[in-house]
Length: 168
Image 1 (tube, rainbow, N blue to C red):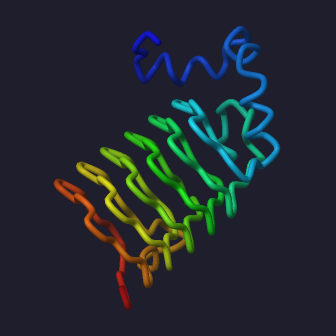
Image 2: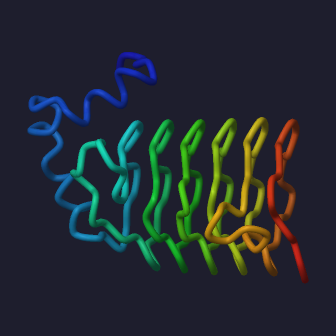
């Protein structure tokens, strides 16, 4: 696979040839899949974002099992509450008021990601957040991390905004 830039990864989701070649993947995600494995969703928009491709605008990933997926540079506004996410790359992904409550997240890369989410009662194990920006966001100001657990995570250079980690 040739190495693609962030711009190319995002642009491919508007390219008819790419979409045609990836019909099976698109259909599986579009059906609110309960399992995604080794899915290349780099640069995709998952959930509704105005003026962005609406391919996955109505997708919910509650209680999904997401394993070894590529979600670099993705924009995520959907709910993943109760999901189990393992070995997935979210480098420079943008989570905007995403739901991550009661989610188990293991061995994932959030390097330079921007995370505005409610991750109350979530468990993060062996994740990298180097250079990330994590916020409770306007809807959940000060509540994003209630009872969340972080084990063996790297927070080098991470910025935390409007978060309260109560009972963690």
